[in-house]
Length: 174
Image 1: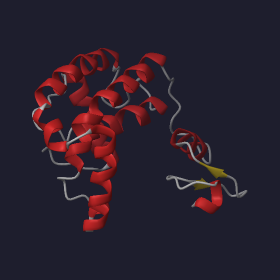
Image 2: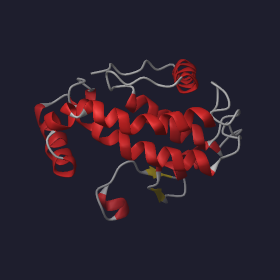
Image 3: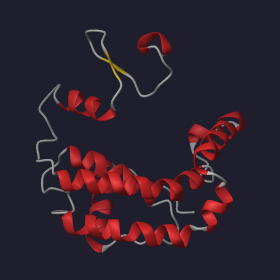
Image 4: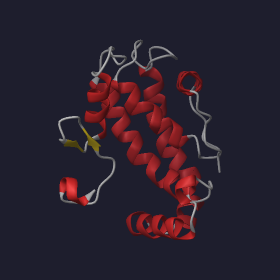
């Protein structure tokens, strides 16, 4: 990977012309444009802003829980230790963060309520699949690992419908 772009980073998509792409959303747009586009709906700046705020507020809730889920990417002790050490440097002690779950949920809930008001359909945040769905669904899938977090009605309906649509089960809540 370092040879391609001069630093260790994932994901990397190497296009047919040999050019690497580093930005996930650029990759999504590129792949969607290879055939008949699927993500044809509009993008809304309000959704992007809401997603940006949600990601900041979910990180202290979700990162400490990933280590407890038995995820395949943490299948070795070394992989799990690497994750925990790296993320602790950024956030602090995982046990202390989990102890503050209620406070963190209380800070996240208004943002989820804002998103609830923005969702137009359970099948696509803007009524038709768009890059906004690529922004929002992974955030909700991550947030769903937080035991005790309740999604507002439209957020819950959207999350459940989209998870069924893509054929993935939510991760367990801890």
